[in-house]
Every structure is written in C-alpha cells, then in structure tokens.
Image (cartoon, rainbow over all chains, first blue to last red; front, side, top):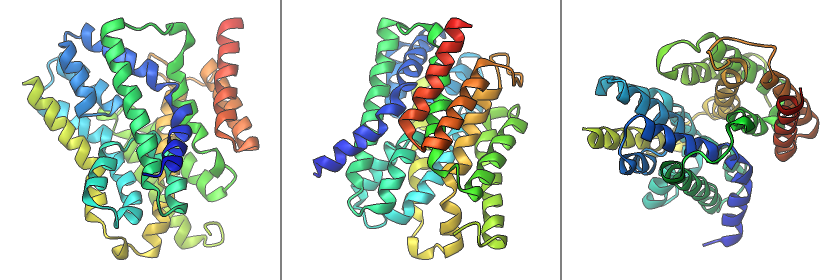
Length: 227
Length: 102
C-alpha cells in the first residue's frame, strides 16, 4: 500500500466534502419524514451510494410510484457513471479484478474528477482513487447516519446546497482557458437548462452526450483547437 | 419490497460504474474515441452545475439571484487563478456576504 498516494487522494477530495455533509444529513432527515425505517435509509446509502439518485428514489417510492419508475430513475440519474467508466477503462485494464470491483463501487462524480488528473499521469494511481473514494464514502455514510439519529444540525440559512455547483465548478477551472473545452462546457450547460423539465433528470446524461458529440465535431473539423 | 428494490437499485448503480470498465479493452479504442473521452468532465459537470445555479427552488429559470452572482464571482476567480480552493472560497464567501448582509 502506497500511503503517500492514498493520503494525496484524501487531501484532494477534502474540499468536495463541503456539500456532501449537509446533503447526507438532509437525506437522513427526509428519509425519516417520508416514513422509511432508519435501518432502510442507512442501508440505502451503503448499497446504492449515489446521493442524487437515492433522493429521487425515496421520493418516488414514497409517493407510490411503480418499482419500474423508481428503478428507471436510478438508472437515468446514474447513467453518467457509464462515461466515467469509459474514461477509466483506458487505465484500469491491468488492475486485478478485486480492484476494479472496489474502485467501481467507490466511483462518484467527485472521486472521478479529483483523481482523473492523477490517474492520467501516474502508474500507481489506484491508491489515489482509493483515498478519494473511501473518504467520500465514509463521509456520506456518517452524514446519512447522523441525519437519521441527530437530525439536520447544520443551519439551513447557510445555503450549503449551493456548494454543490461551486465545488463542481472548481473541478473545471483548469480547463476554462481552453477554447475547445469551454465550447463543450457551454453546450452542456445550455442543453441542461433546455432539457431540465424532462423526467428522471434525464438532462444530465442527455446534455453530456450532446456535448460529447460537439467535442467529436471539434476534433474532426478544428484540429488546431483540440491538440 | 423496499429491500428488494434497494438491492436492485444498488446493482443497477454498480453496473453503471463497473460495466464499461469491465467491457472496454483500451486497445479497441481508437484515437478519436480517446480524445472524445478526454472531454467527459467538461461535458458532464456543467449539466449538473447550470441547473443548480439558474433554477430557483420553484424550478423556474432566474438570472437575478445571489446564486448567479456568487457563481459568476467564483467563475472569474477560477478563470484567473485556476485554483480549486480559491474558486470554492470565492463562491461561498461572496454568497454568504450577499445572503447575510444584503
């Protein structure tokens, strides 16, 4: 075990945790309010481990949506992970199966984005992903459990939900000055606004795919932009 | 029932994460595909950022909100500094100054 790289992964993911804690608390509190057993709520964070999808799932279930609808929502909201998996497949091929399974379970938006630069540049990257993944996993579980048993002790007035888009923005700032990346970002963002009211938060994966088609177009037609 | 659903939801989520890692062999990816995959963060994250910034709690599009101004502030600082921590601090600090003092 390479502790130095493991700690680097932990350190890199720390700023991302700011919105994870209040989100986990809200998930725990809302789960109780919707009438779920505390043990079910806690287990859902262990088994699914995907905040936005879990929230959509318990809301749909509690209003009596069919199992098919609830599971479709899980699939639609989490389908963006297919793209993360496609990116990582380029680097993971030599990893033993147990590592592929473990790092897949721990794969989140935040762990993907903070570890990707390290994965691209270093051979022994698995401990970086383990560090970022385990840290986010642990904080998500602890905040879900705290939400269930202690309630939402972080003042709502702080508006920490807003920390989600801000931490995500912070993951993109290194690419902002690259015109090709900027075009892809704007296409994705504008698409998400236009597609926002479609069901199942389909706008996330749909906007991402539209933006990737634009990226493909840029690569094919504007080679100088995309070196 | 809820237990079965949660377990299926967990399997679906895990397969979203694992399936392409398991299925894609890097030698089968051509250069163009690899280049396109290089844009995944830039293609996915704005789709989660924009709605969170520009839609208010009533799900309507708004441009004249503290969230939008704080986002622009973080965007400018992020653009200039290229620094993750500075971007987060500038976004949250400007947001808190607005909601607590304006």
